[in-house]
Amino acid sequence: MDFKELSLPKQYLNALSDLGFEQATPIQIKAVPAIRSGQHVIGIAQTGTGKTAAYVLPILQNLSYAKGDWIRAIILVPTKELVVQVNEQISQLAKYTDLRYTGIYGGVGRKAQVQKIEEGIDILVATPRRLLELYEKDNIQLSKLEILVLDEADKMLDMGFRPQINLILDILPRKKQNLLFSATFSERVEELSWDFMDFPSKIEITPEATPVETVEQFRYFTPNLRTKLNLLGDLLKDEESFHRIIVFTRTKKNANQIFEHLQKQTSGDIRLIHSNKSQNARINSFNAFKEGNVRILVATDVMARGIDIDEVSHVINFDVPIVHEDYVHRIGRTGRAFKTGCAITFSTKSEKYHIQKIEDKIRMKIPFVSIPEHIEVPETPFEENQAMEREIDRQKRKEDPNYQGAFHEKKDYKIKQKNKSRKRKKNFAGKGSSYFQSSSPKKKTSSKKHRHKNKK
Image 1 (cartoon, rainbow, N blue to C red):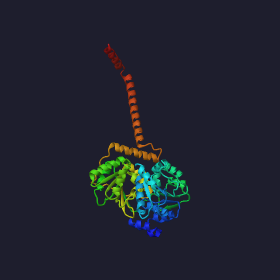
Image 2: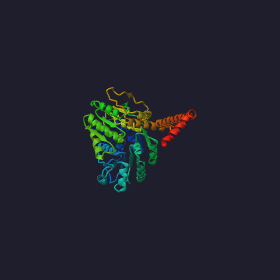
Image 3: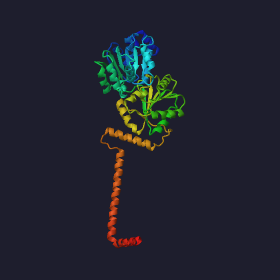
């Protein structure tokens, strides 16, 4: 559907045209009219389908123009990066209006954020904790709020924001329009919606955890960390195909190792994003990658949700995510806006369990590809192998509470062998004692006399 068919005012059509957007996505087609009419809406759609514009466009249209000194709409998102991104999309879509907006998040001083709010804004994009901080300091007035949006609701719950969300819902006026957007609709998200939404319209575009159809997926079996690094370095030598890449990892430690390895192995600028990096460093790295000045971005799952970057050619899962829904969010960074992309996953023997769970969730098998013969596959160090074996034991115990574990079995076997050995020695000693007593008593006596003489 053309955006003109959504009955959007000319200023928004012009803004969309400036961005090169002509066709509305399915979530936009269904959500824009429902939100514009004032309904409470639950929007469920996979990542990369235009959810942000689906609620921003009708909010802008309903607010219409700048008015008063109070906040009229709040958009809550889980991360600082999403605050920056949503605020930027508002600026692009509201460029031909006088509507005022800003974003607030933790990790930076409050003074500049408070000053911007006091000047008067219509739309506030915020992380839950920073919003509460400003409210508790009396820096923010929420009594005249008209619209509340919870975006990436499933991720906010995963990150432990439920207590903050509950507090925010308690202090906001009851009479307002409520919108909830999420990639998945778990029981926890559904329970959250019950707390603040009456008779919402539910718009579900795709089944839960369905991967983007435009993303080609495959995986390698990589025995250990060193093999993963060797394979990654080799793949990224193809700069023509791998022209814009996000490498995802579970831990900050692995992210640092990958970053250091790629700096030695590949050319061009590489950036690193994880929670230990300063806020300015994270935003600068994100912007540099988004603008095309950086070819490779190494990141933990802080980048997996809702980050909209055009023309990411490849997503590489250096580690398999243990939160299985995050696989869909990771690979959704590529294949966006009807373009094709590729997602590659490296997995060890201890990550096979998570691959199977992910395949069950996405309802498809991830094709397996053999490691090229020229890639060096070193032997797995003892400590790394032990860690993987323990993880496999943990997974088996999770599936079967009665499972004792390989380490437990080995321990039992060693104890049994030790007991058998002791029994054999005891039996042999017993037989030897009776034999000497019956067959050679004189020797025994003479030996005693001999010892007695020696003592003298």
